[in-house]
Length: 263
Ligand code: KIV
Image 1 (spheres, protein in one colour):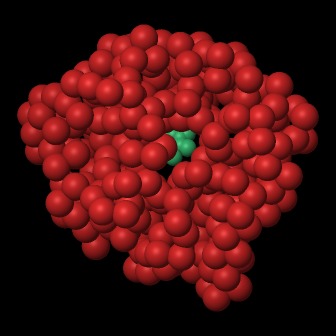
Image 2 (cartoon, helix red, strand yellow):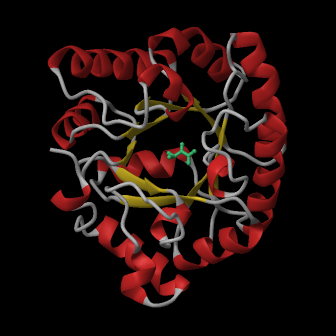
């Protein structure tokens, strides 16, 4: 397999071919995911909850993400790996550059930051210094204490319009991928059509270019998984077939269906 690039992901968008991505935290699962055909993996700060037993992503550090990025890179040498910038690791453009360097040197192809227009200077500075950036809008788990919980975002006109403005501002500043989490399907489709870059959804309906799931949700490990997640292991019977089924259902547009989306 050739290394997966951003140009390839943009081509998928142009050809309207949907793609499945998943979180990965270690080399064994990364290898299994790559073998089944997953080309993009996120070393998410969700590892605070899935691996560390925390009740939010806030305790996760740059060192934690760097460690797991190294592990994932070893298991999936050709995959496109996005590494999450943890809470308060990008509160200024300069701090973001220093911490992004650690994650890129650990093997990431791109870093992901949560938030809207306030990040434009940071995105510009990182991009100009050869660090590709993925945005993350909608339900941004690092802001759980401001949002008052893990709730669907953009349900009313004002917040929906703000999300659209933020997405455009971030694209103009240089992000090259965007994750939209827990927003109504129609809003996610509109943003996906508006932007040139590939948009990856989670709890954002089937209209985005790609989908992402936390691996523990896709494999039925999370005790109380979010309603948009689907336990593919329950349907497939073994982990390899579960990942294969996830990819197949994303590519043919059958996941997420209405039951796993917010209308
Ligand atoms: O940390 C993570 O796993 C994420 C996904 C939910 C997109 O950011």
